[in-house]
Length: 341
View 1 (cartoon, rainbow, N blue to C red):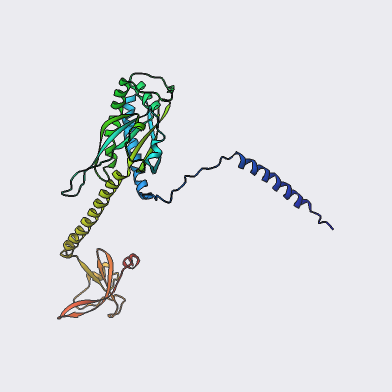
View 2: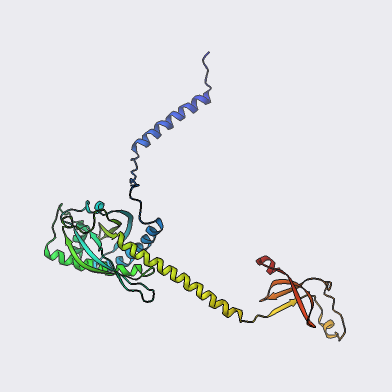
C-alpha cells in the first residue's frame, strides 16, 4: 500500500521545491568566480608580510600624491591602491600597446648603518600612466574645466608637447615616492627618461619577477589607472637592508638594556619592614610612655611584610644578624595580586 503524506509533509515538500527553484536561478545569475593559477615550478619570491609592508607603503604614497595632484589639477583627486601582485614581467609587458609610455626611474638605497655605502639598483623601477589618464591630467593643467572623460583611440601616439607635459607630471609623482619608504629605509627615486613604445625595447628580462602595484585615480569626474613596476632585484636589495637595520636595532636595544641594568644595580631603594598595624586614639598615643606595650594582634613569629614603593614584594621572619636586627626572606610575591594584598 502506498504511503499517504500528511498535509504538513506536503507543505514542506512544496516549500522545498519552491526554494530549490529560486536557488537554481540565483546560481545561474551569479557569475563564476575566477582564480589565478599558481605556478608551482616558480614559487613566490616575497612573503605575505612583505606584500603587506608594500601595501602600507603605497597607501601612504597615495595620500601624499593625492594632495600634490589636487593643487596641480585644481580639482579633487582620489587615489586608491587596488592590488599588489607578484608576477613575471612578461605578464605586464604583454598588456602594453605601441602607443603606451613608461617612465624609467633610478633607485638608490641609503643604508643607515655606520659606514654603509649607497646601493644603486641595476634594474629601473617603471611607472605607467594610462594614456587617457595622462591626457586628462594635461587638459586640467592647461586650464580645461570639463569633467567629461576624454576618448582616446587605440594606439594613440603622444605629440612632442604632450611628452613634455607628461614628463612634468611624472617627475613630481616620482619625486614624492621616496617619502613613503622613510619608516623602513631611506630610498631615493629619480626620474631617468621617458620610454616611448616600450614593447619594442627589452627593459627587463621577460622572466624577471616583479611586483606590480595597481592604483586607481579619480579626478574631475574621470577615472584612470596608474601602475608601478618594482623589479624583484630592487626589492631584494631593499628588504635585505631592512633586515640589517632591524637586526642592528635589536642588537643596540640589547646593548642598551645592559647599560640600563648596570645603572639600576647601583641605585638605592627604601625598603619598609612591617610586622603589623593597629589603630590608637590620640589620647592613648598622648599617654604612651617608655616600656608600654602596643598590641598589634599578631604573634612575634608571624611573617613580616617587606614593602618597596608602597607594594609588598617579600615576606620574611624577624631575627638578628651580627647583633643587628634583620629579616630573613621566606617568599617572593611575584603576582600583582600578591603585591597588592
